[in-house]
Length: 270
Image 1 (tube, rainbow, N blue to C red):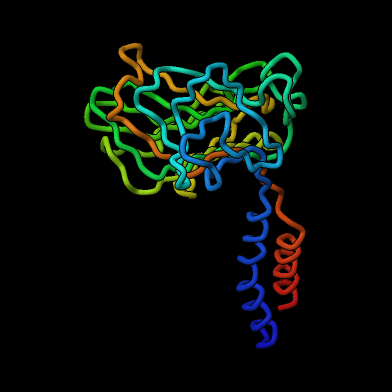
Image 2 (tube, helix red, strand yellow; image 1 turned 90 degrees about the horizontal axis):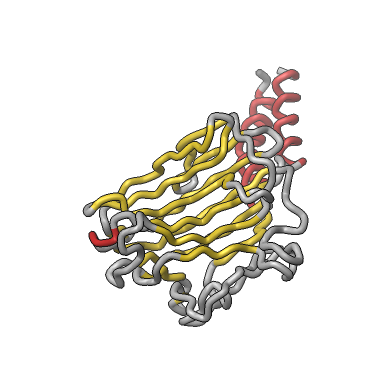
């Protein structure tokens, strides 16, 4: 290879990560909560949704239980009992008039549902307790779930699931002790156009499925549940969330594709 072309190739390779970074940074936050502007005591009804859709949770009780700490975290209370919240709330922006579903479900493209945990501490008496941020289709069927649970008297875990041609694919993304003070992010990225789904832990792919068969994004769910024995009944358990939400992931940008084309051209001119 001539020296000039070699220098050009090196420069292009160095710049390509910048193109790729630009592609990722262009992700659109659709429904997103980072709790930075929320006051202490703000619950799901009050916390700021900074996503482009900015939908509202359906909350049918006056007691909210889980609340912002006023310092950028949303804290799940250990003694809240079971409950389910849905988004968007019927009759509000983006929703159907009479049901908690998007008026215009998302049927194409790639999406990421993600939770960033700051820390948690669970009591052994909370075995069986689970918290889920989920995505349902417009028929109410689960297509993607991120789950935190207390699975034994000495351990907690983070799991994910999606709907595939073979049924719901549940996988454990991480196992921990009852307490964890290390920031941890879990996510599921699913593509309606190519039927692929990626399970992510701290941004790194853990599992890849190529038979994703979700039909659309119809609603989001926030669910606290258990095994039926004193579910979410002890104040000794607490989970702190740094952020959570749903994003649309764009196709590779023209700049990235152009950079790849430039590399191919240089290769042909060797």
